[in-house]
Length: 442
Image 1: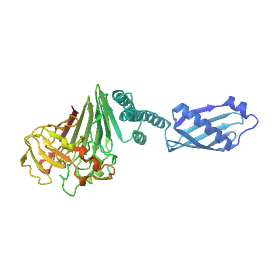
Image 2: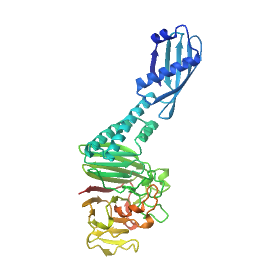
Image 3: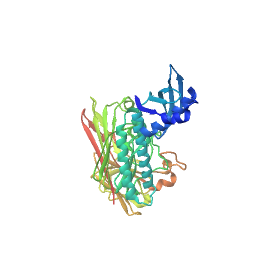
């Protein structure tokens, strides 16, 4: 693609170079400097760094050769032609391995992304300007950054998305949410600047471990070991790269829709064809998650999905789960037979791993120290799991996605889910299933 960048430096050359001339090497060095200055100015490629221009003399005053440089570490090559009569230089360059327009789009997107990331970091660090102002600004920047990403295409779009990091941000001044593209894991949910989710010291964002803790990961297409002891814990969606299908904002509501389709990689784990659409929405100070599974194959497909919110409490011994009174439950460390009735709120006594047959779809985790309750409303789940780790499930020196022993008393999960195989949803070809959860705090 021709750059349409040409420069006629008659006045400068006539004043400086008359009578001295330049050989091919000197001419190449001169053109390199002019290309650097002109391309940056014209196309906004502030990160362009020209390294050399090599020219060979052809017939008459004509020269041709190659220009080399890089943009953010990515090599770029130019085809360069030049006319030089000892007094006047006229050069032309075409980018042979990429498009200046796409590189410029990437550069502009980088600027916006870096600004957005800086403001987002300001908010996370609690800068003096205050949470609301920083949160609102971060949301504005990310909206622009997202639009810039959509303007790019192909490999360049993927590179621009990498500049944003692996996460997307929703923010409206009242609350904020951060979610990864890899695995679509909710990393953070803050209301009024207060983090509601438990987070590890370091994330395992690429899901290198079989299961990593923190935030709100997806459990799909099965929960726990519901698909059998030979299958990995909690399915495979949490370790798959999702595409971003669309974004929208209206008033205090903003959302991102992620997608995952069956592929050769998923069929190694699950022999069914499907389309998974996951909407993450921030509606005022509420987080809403909607996971729609569609059977796109020709055979009936079982689904046992769930959300796995890691909630942070001041002291688990002074916290309790509400909304389970009258529900039958089991302590899975003893039995999987749900034949005991919970008389009232479920008080966390340390390590727990309880499964409830639910009677309603509104629950909460009350933190009696902080005088705060995280409320969860759900639909599309047939059971509820409450879990808090024991010492064997924590580490003295934790790695990415692991729970530090010192953090053990701050972690409680309240998980709307469908488990085990006796409760599976069976989707006929073309049918869908919706798993919904709304999270608020008061």
